Amino acid sequence: MLFTSTRADWLGNIRADVLAGLVVALALIPEAIAFSIIAGVDPKVGLYASFSMAVVIAIVGGRPGMISAATGAMALLMVTLVKEHGLEYLLAATILTGLLQLLAGYLKLGQLMSFVSRSVVTGFVNALAILIFMAQLPELTNVTWHVYAMTAAGLGIIYLFPYVPKIGRVLPSPLVCILACTAFAMIVGLDIRTVGDMGELPDTLPVFLWPDVPLNFETLSIIFPYSLALAVVGLLESLMTATIIDDFTDTDSDKNRECKGQGVANVATGLIGGMAGCAMIGQSVINVKSGGRGRLSTMVAGVVLLLLVVFLSDWVRQIPMAALVAVMIMVSIGTFSWSSITDLKSHPLSTNIVMISTVLVVVFTHNLALGVLVGVLFAALFFANKISHFMYVDKQIDDEGRKVTYEVHGQVFFNSADRFTAAFDFRDAVEFVEIDLRKAHFWDISAVGALDKVVIKFRREGADVNVVGLNEASATIVDRFGVHDKPEEIDKVLGGH
Image (cartoon, rainbow, N blue to C red; front, side, top):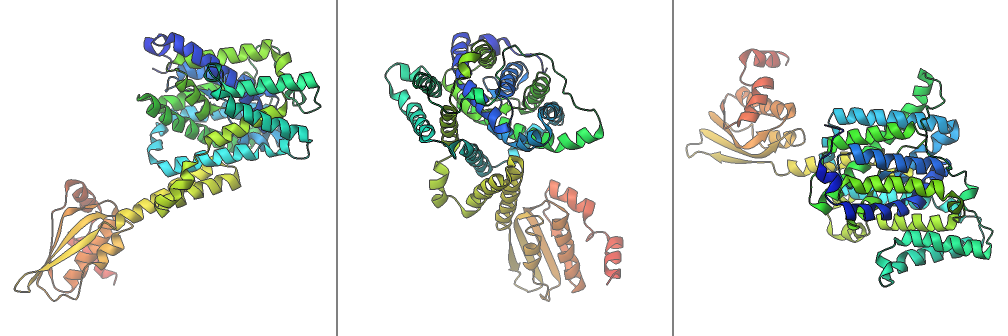
């Protein structure tokens, strides 16, 4: 059932789960704030969302050990809605997003991930990295040199601190970057933008909050397009992350339950004043690599995050924006699949086109769902084209020249139907034609139509045609839609000429 978990999920790895949850909570703070700023809302909206998503998904999610929170992919989709209609409409959109994801779970749409190829996933990840980086550019334009210096120093800390003996592997370097840059800015008294300049941080625990929007069709027409995009992108990123964590841990997860879990978590998040969220690839990997395997690690991450921002908010307000920019640049660099660039030389052209088209569509439209749709469409077209080339027909004529046997090999469907028809020579003046289909498979009505066309044309030329070797699946579709073995149907066809 949706609301039950096994004892092993919660208590099978207590020490490692608690420590991993603490690390993730510390690393979540700067990202939750930064994603809130990307979306154009107060930092507390992203922080409440990260708390709510993590705690709820720990209970109802389908992939133990996976971290869900406010994310850059979702934040980017909210910008226009927040600008034009405000926070209350965002909260309503978040609730509707959750309901759509719940529906997707009950419709078992999690199985659709099997249609997303590796090249589409790579393009998705690369586009996400580019968009996160582009979102940092406003903080780096028309600013003093101090901002550039602090951003560079922050990146230096992030990438060099892990090499410090002993403590380098214990403390997350993004957190060290935040602490060091904040301490330096406070001691020196630098006049640069801080988190406090972006909006108020929470000073209380979240409470139930129904969005203050009119419940009518006009409101639905405003939020539905955003909610649909958020639901699709949230499920895509969550299911992709679940697949990655499955590989890391050599375990399986329930993708349809994950869809439902994301839905429940987003409904709960919208009702406490949080923005829509989904699974986080980076934080989930941090959790697993820190030893987190069970649901307890995700629960600890969410609870500790809330306690930190509520009771230490005076310190969080002092964090320089330059430090957050450094963290987000690190996230974008770490998210981008750099090997995909070198792989361009060795991978097939079709694979490269799928990956690059996914990236381009996402970057230029800022719509991750549309990019994935284009990528999946291209991948399907290239696959269909490739499979059609494995279809060929062998021709054999007996010694007396009275009988021709055509042996068909491969898959016959809409993309290979014309090649199937073209393989037959209707000018052969023979008495008997045998079409051997033992090594072929017919997939759709286009294939059946091509077979009908071949048989009828040979019969027009006076040949006696015999079709043999249809496998059971092919015979089912041919018997249902074919006309070459139904005299009354053939008369209708020929009567039209």
